[in-house]
Image (cartoon, rainbow, N blue to C red):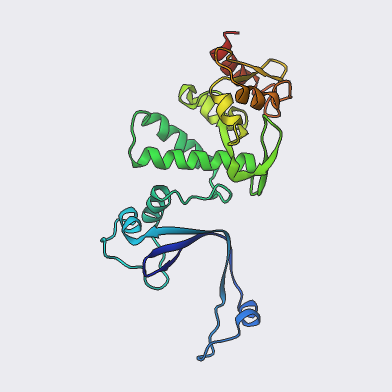
Length: 249
């Protein structure tokens, strides 16, 4: 984050960091004391924002009059709180999550299914991070399985084919087949609400028909009769659950 007298004016994601004195000398030489800036950070997703100190301090749990001075590193708990409350998490750069951490997060989420406390939120964050890493790796672009468009990964979601809250433990853990990449340009919404479904051959077809408009028809026209790239013999049962839920067959 970058800050001035009124608050935070810019945010970014640390994409890479290294310790390289030779590079620092080549880039910036030295200061009056013969020192250089040998710890190098590479930033991405630089965004200009306007976050007043009062809002930042509330998110961080600081006194209202706190002013950011110098270079500060927040502890993990404070960082997560700030990222969540101010909606600053990166969709492109996901933290490394081991498979066992993912399994533990799923178990925690199931055990606290009706809770909204910190453990549940943290578990959901780990689970979603693992699923996004599985689908998008470290790529900048990904492909929507419904419309087939290549898009920035922050416009794609790891969508549960079978509604997440309806999944049994074993289904939640079947991450290779229970989620598929869908875009935020309409595909995730029309699939989630059943306006399109996927048949037993993997073709996208119309689902709900009780409501229709010209705008909806135009959106669905670019999807219907396409082969869903998220459909495989192993994911077919989840698409079948979704199809039966909205069409009865």
